[in-house]
Length: 194
Image (cartoon, rainbow, N blue to C red; front, side, top):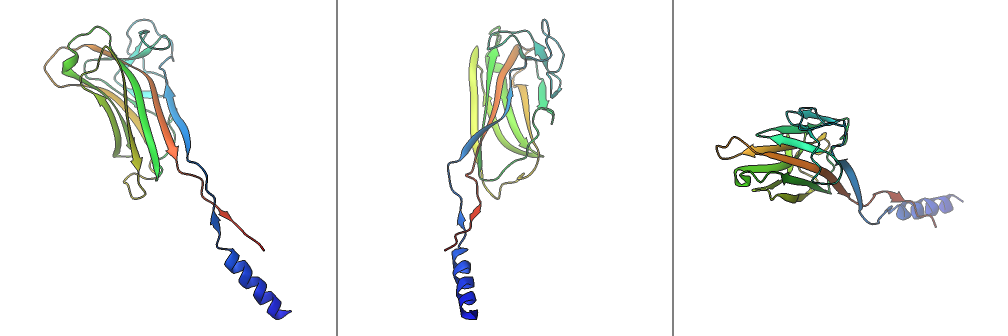
C-alpha cells in the first residue's frame, strides 16, 4: 500500500506538468469617445465628460454624431479615470485611432494633430498626422513587451494640436477616439490526473 501511494504521488507529480491553457488572443475596446456629452451649441470651452484640459466641445457634425472635441490653436485634452480606468499590460498590442478634421481648410500644413497613450509618466504610443487632411483617420499601434517601462501603471490618453509655424490658428476637430488592446491568450494550469 505504501509503494502504491508513492507511485500515485509520482504519477501525480509528473502529471502536474501543468499544461498552460491556450487559445486565441482577445481584442478588447478599452476606450471609445464620440464627444457627444454634454450637449453643446457652437464652439465652447465645455469639457467633454471624463476629460480635463483646455479644449472644448463643438457642435461640429462633420463626423458621426452631432459633436466633436474642438481645438482652436494649441490646446489639449487628457482622459480621467472616469472614462479610462485600466493599467498597461505586458505582452499586449495597443491600437489608438481617431478622426481629425480641419473644418475650414486654414493652413493645415502648420499644425500637428495627435493622440498619445501614456502609462504613468511613460509615453507608450503616439498617433499623429502632419498635416491633417480636411478629414482624416489617424491610427498607430504598438506591442508592449514584458520588460517595457510603465507595466502596471494607469493608462491615459492625451489629445493635442501643436503649432509648428507662427500662425494665429485654425480649428481642428477630434472625434471617434478608440483605444483597443489585443490581450494575450489566457494563461492557467490544467491538472492532468491518470
